[in-house]
Image 1 (spheres, rainbow, N blue to C red):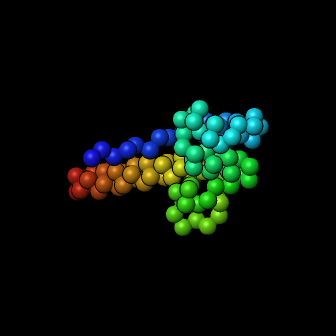
Image 2 (image 1 turned 90 degrees about the horizontal axis):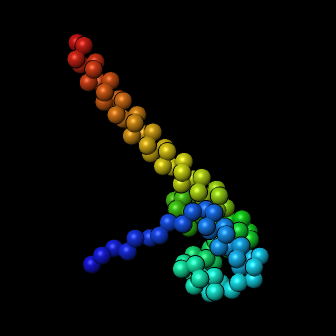
Image 3 (image 1 turned 120 degrees about the vertical axis):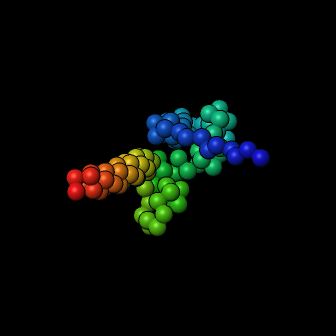
Length: 105
């Protein structure tokens, strides 16, 4: 059984898709079909554009109880990736420091 890979859409794509409904008068179904995205995803994007908010569970924020706009969500994901990378780099540097400290003894 193959796992289905979840598609990743850019912030600009999400905002443009939502604007089709908000500004151009497309129905959710029309826009979803023409763009090839799920109806539920499109509804979330439109809700976020209209109200500037996405539910935290949709933003994959864990225990955070405040809602995020689409751009805030994108920034949060970017910052989390950067934090993860920096933690890994820090651990590597710690191990290197221990290694070289042992060599100089």
